[in-house]
Image (cartoon, rainbow, N blue to C red; front, top):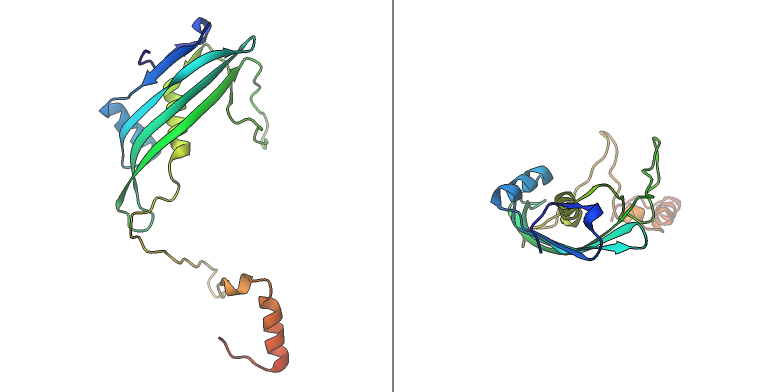
Length: 179
């Protein structure tokens, strides 16, 4: 198993194993590109195998320990990520064109090019696996209300299905008190 970042696709005639373990400088660069505090550990291992007559299939596992900011306190939050990664490379893949395109059903499908960029796939998989709202232990829940100036904010009580009926009942009975 070689520590490679590019696999030439014309040489993959049988199962080809790979392993990436970026060094400290590379992990720092990944953290910078992803906008997080740090990547303490990062590995991407797996294999690429022929699939059908012309396609190649990558199956691997991404392992990482990352540090992000807590969305409430800003404190560092360390998260362990272990994520399966699958990609199918096909010469028949067509890039969607136009201003508005629908997402393809198979988001693991990619064009088959002269090389498979393992480092790019690793970083993309890490970006997708990051917790979107990391929270430190003990971070209190935050209640945020956003409205236009001069408007009354919508509350949870207002969104309940019978809130309108309750308001109508209160109007008809002459009860204008707030609970």
